[in-house]
Length: 464
Image 1 (cartoon, one colour):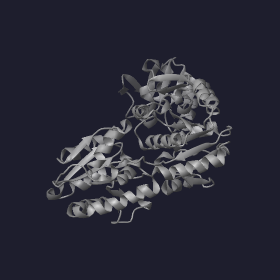
Image 2 (spheres, rainbow, N blue to C red):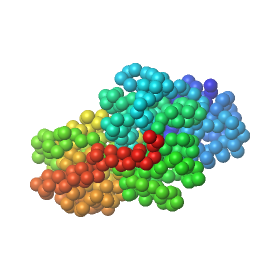
Image 3 (cartoon, rainbow, N blue to C red):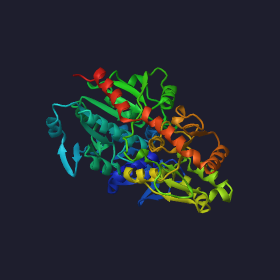
Image 4 (cartoon, rainbow, N blue to C red):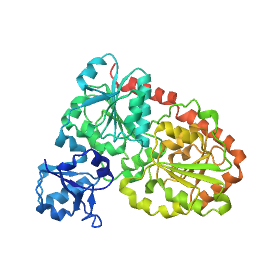
């Protein structure tokens, strides 16, 4: 099969590692700055150059698929050979395989072996170590503890597979490559499904009207709401839950008639979390943890640190934890000069949850300067470890923060700089603020809170 791929942005990079490059004739993009360049040896061309290539299908890997589909039609491409990223399975038609501990089994065998328990499918956009995927993994653990049989499915795979394997959770790593027909046949063999993230709205539409309840769990920031989905496309079997007030406000701004409830994610308790800071240092250790991209605003923290006097800079140790989002490499390239000019800043790539726990234990302060972040999981994790959190006004946890008592909120880069100076000058006050931050975790994000809400949902919506 010869495939043309239209779009080389965020969605493209999510699927690209899992595609057979030998089948890809070329890449298409409307961005003139990309045309003529190559990705892994595959050339990017203009849509106007389609006529010079032989191909069997065009796969749109972009959030703007409706506009791009119309553009292809105007170029004479038949609608019958155009697929969007929610239809990849109709191209490749892989069989559903359940993985666990290096073993693989067929779906029907798993269903038969769990016929006496509630069977629940959880679907994530990818099996990655990102906030939404980790939140869904923690939900899977809770449901399993409640006695249910759980399958964690990812549209594509990722490094979270290592965590799932270590925890003994069963998973499907290529749900997106299964045909839509087989996906629906599979889902109807479960008692309920959880679909995590607004980005999977096409899957929600596809499964609306099925005979099982679907909990659509939404955490997204404003920038993810590109192109509306008609609320009439959501069946009565779909129940919308948002991960906090901020996420619900964003969702309801786009779907005013939608009835939504709140379901916060949970963070499993680490027995060492309340033990305080590990390691001794004269420096205040602060960290920004998250995917490197403009939305996470690493640049804001770097500029705030660089504006401190040398005396204050020398008393700080700054960790930047997370991998660079490929689609935003240009953003990070512009920040590297700041990093090179700051001797106290250390870059750390993506880490496992176990490695992240060690980082939290050595921290004094977590900084989350995000430009738009409804409920970042790293802030709650830091609270669990009793760490002081300094967050921007655009971060969902602002609803829990009492300024100076259990954390800090800032509204500008200058305010962040002032707060960094404050923590250096008031190191003796940090432990008490951290203890009160931990109370936020205990009261809102611990296992028992989620378990109770899931129990009520299952009682009200799942057949007994």
